[in-house]
Image 1 (cartoon, rainbow, N blue to C red):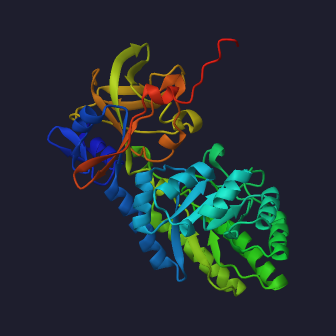
Image 2 (cartoon, rainbow, N blue to C red):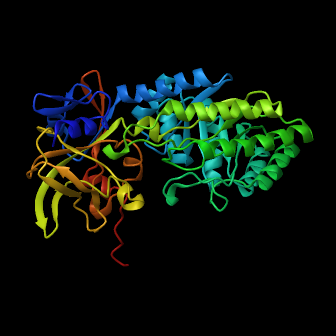
Image 3 (cartoon, helix red, strand yellow):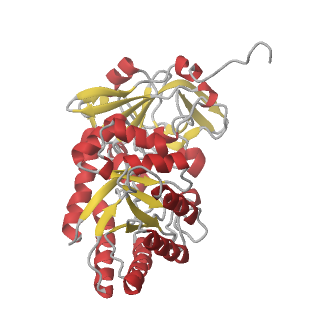
Length: 444
């Protein structure tokens, strides 16, 4: 590959990525050494890149929003004990869905007041856990609100703050599977339902303090967010006029996109997204004579995606009439996004990444699906069996959606910081696959 293409691809990687000598390094760690020590597939998270994304959000909020503001990390993107510990040190909030993520948050030391709970169909057990382990529950529907009203009458701690998730009828430009704000979305309340919910909260003395919406994931234009904010502010103004309700907090969710391929560069600007959102909110509040609420953004992908790298080893190389196949030891089971959304990725060979490309390659995994193709038609050098391939922008929605398809063992995960690699998640073992299994009795 030419030097310019290598440089562009390298800019997709964590901010600490370098070509040193004849190999690729991240966070001061040689990727060949990490693969030898921990095996492949292997996932790497770079602390410096995580910090950089949070700093970009905070600086933009301080610059563009004159009211109180904060960040909630969307745990569905990737969640682990180590990441929760990092979140607590950064003073971020954490968005959880259900008892499982709440348990990870608690085990990682996250203060309940900083935990926000989502979910389109929360179970009774989820709601009970949220009452005890969270500071905010985002109410998705009227059925859930009825369950919360009943829960509030039972013995136990009082309900945490409630926010209503609104379905504002706005669609962002992204894959239809990850659009969430349109009129027929399964998520959230219509504006009429939201007004009914707000009146029920008032009637039953529930602590309704905020409004929330989320339009979708991996979009690059904030204009629909501004339109949705107008809808929510109209509700807040109407409820204030009707019974004096005060909007304390508003969240436009997250979903800001990232660059996955060199053709997507430059990286979408976090500052541009925050500026558009914050300025629309401030202007809308002034127009309605509303005090500025707390602006609580909810990024996941734009914090964690670029910080993550997937490291694979090539097992076989084959040629079909029109394709050169590099067959990797991971794929669909640890990254289903190409199969689900047609997500487009890039890659670099770890050893001598600046080698001249000899033509396009198709990178596929070992699983029994024709859709198990990670990357299509990517110019690459002559790559041989046994070589390592690094796929950047692997930090979001890979491991959180991974599976044991074909008996796959989920990868080990490393945290890279200060030139050292820390194992934060062990590789699954065959024993882990069998742990929950039970044989039939002999008489069955």
